[in-house]
Image (tube, rainbow, N blue to C red; front, side, top):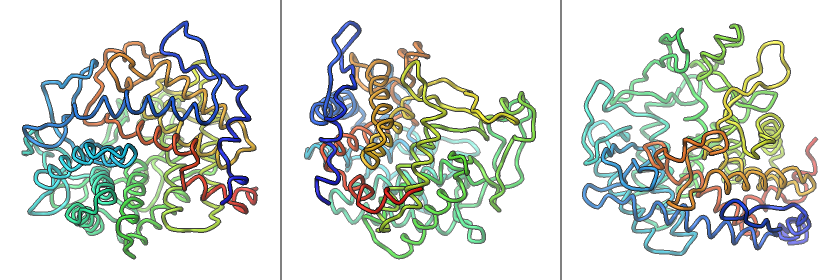
Length: 476
């Protein structure tokens, strides 16, 4: 596609009247930016405060894999469990960094993690990746010590596929394939479609406890299907299909794209969080407001997941090679628009965590003002993508700049590196919170920064694909 149709530099330069603070602290002057200068700012921050903060610090040279827990000042903590989610995310991040920076050192960091996944996190007897191991790769003990999760296996597939796409290492791809086949045999609901997240070591489904249900906590008699494992299976299958264009992978990727797009996404433009096996939504809407708040963990609007899903749907559609996919683009836009209209904080410039449509109310009530680091990352990514695809709607660019301003002011630790777990605007205590954990790595923010840099430099195929003539112009 020609630059005259999609030229982010021209688009961004035309918006130089929007002022962005790229200062290192209070009192520093504000500067106007265009695409080139903003891309440079983002790249410098990415290298220094994300890639350079995590690597090689998290490399566990004694036991393999990556350290999980890091202190607020980015030091390795004493307790170091290893979870498949964070281990797989580190493999993905290091693989992506190696390609982005053209730096072979990061290829080594990624390969280091791949070795641990294969040798210690793969169940050599029953198959599938364990959810949690000790620092040295053994069982942590306890009744659920050897349980497995579709969510975690998704990130193993994601990381291993990314490493294969970087290196051509067929051993890594083989284990990604094995994990995919294990999920297809054990996690997938062959009658109703979709995947069950929680399984024991042998792959038997586990019933879901009533997470987030407060004093009314109960145990469900069924295994729930959840939004979070589903969108990350979508993400993992996208990466796997790029590495291994197998027909069954294509079928499952297409299935997950349609389930997330057409079943999980509500008409208003947000995700239903949980379903029973037969796709009955798990909802608190028939309860009173107090119970709704108490049980909000299993039924709320998750702004970060909604805006992240917009990107993941477009990525999946592009990987499948679907031309003029106005349906997926329309739903992705609806997810972003609903988030922007209902979850954006005009005071801080950040994105809220959670909200709810209480019965009888057509407006969203904010349940959690916390501006989590990953939420801002995903907002940054999808907003800039929407700005590129819909350059005639400057609200996306304006919101993107506000999000970046919030990140720069309240999330990036310019002294120790990495981002705080929550924005300091509402959570100043987060300055002393751990920077790394089994759940917190550099995956969300590094992906957002890399994608935004590519968009700004007109190097991102996904943006060019959906900005093609005859795509967004036909939306109504």
